[in-house]
Amino acid sequence: MTTTLTTSPDEAATHLRRGELVAFPTETVYGLGADALQPEAVQRIFEAKGRPADNPLIVHVVRRGQIGEVAADVPPPAERLLEHFAPGPLTLILPRHEALSSVVTAGLDTVGVRMPRLPLTRSFLEACNTPVPAPSANRSGRPSPTSWEAVHEDLGGRIECILKGGRTEEGVESTVVDCTTTPVTVLRPGAVPVEDLRVVLGHVDVGDTEGERRARSPGTRHRHYAPSAQVRLVDDPGRLSDIDSNLDAAYIGLDPPPQPGAFQTVHVEDNLEAYAHDLFHVFRACDEAGCEAIYAQTVPAEGLGRALNDRLRRAAAR
Ligand code: AMP
Ligand code: MG
Image 1: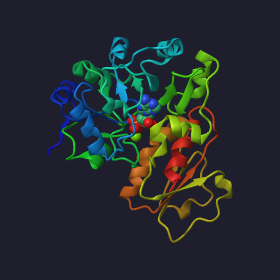
Image 2: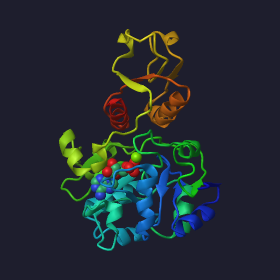
Image 3: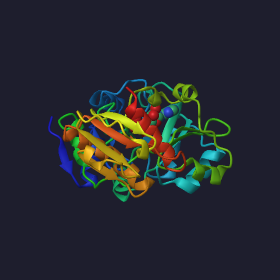
């Protein structure tokens, strides 16, 4: 199959409406979309990614009115989150609309809904004029794609179209909030910090126990975000002494490593936002360079730090 590369949101939308698969940029990572009303097309998303069928898709909409096409109800806390964070990198779990294909929801009675804020995404969704279920546009298990080149590397020849935009701004995925519970529960930490949700809602659960979160958010059960290189977590770079000199290694973190010469490449990030922006990009660059180990500094578990630590831990898990 030939994969058409385009910068035109209208051309990309034409492919989608024909029942084809289209990868598109958002402010978080690139997504792989299909028309929500064509279940055979949605099914192909799972095949192209190698995604387990029990992992539901987030549905992308461009305006508030479209939420009613996929969700049966928007509870008051969800309404307040929409007022403050839509459009933006926040996904709300809502009761699903009975007409929505169960391929999208992986058989659950809930649906994840998000309204992206990137202008190019919004033009694309406007032109699609249909809700667009889309997971991240990577092969399952690989680091999420933060550039169109990364999408092409994983899915070129497997999907009909890639809408080309720039590097994504956030670099980590949306925060997923279950709005069917009281109080609401964060199922996946992401680009919107829990602290910001608490400013709006007061009490927000963080689904702290791993078991609880796994039971309620199927995606968190699967291995994720991993480069081919082994990821080794570094809590305190100052005490990093056992760097394996037989390995081609890279380093990424907020603090410089004590022996920079021991690494092929060193990425010292200015702040949490820059770290999140670069993480998946660096993972992929390391794979391309044939790197065998990536030493990655963990960060304080606050703000964007929760999302970063979550991605780092899951990338390090084997
Ligand atoms: P991605 O696969 O990268 O798009 O991430 C989507 C995340 O949202 C995965 O962890 C999914 O399991 C989760 N998700 C999507 N829909 C639901 C839902 N209805 N209930 C719980 N989690 C969901
Ligand atoms: Mg993903």
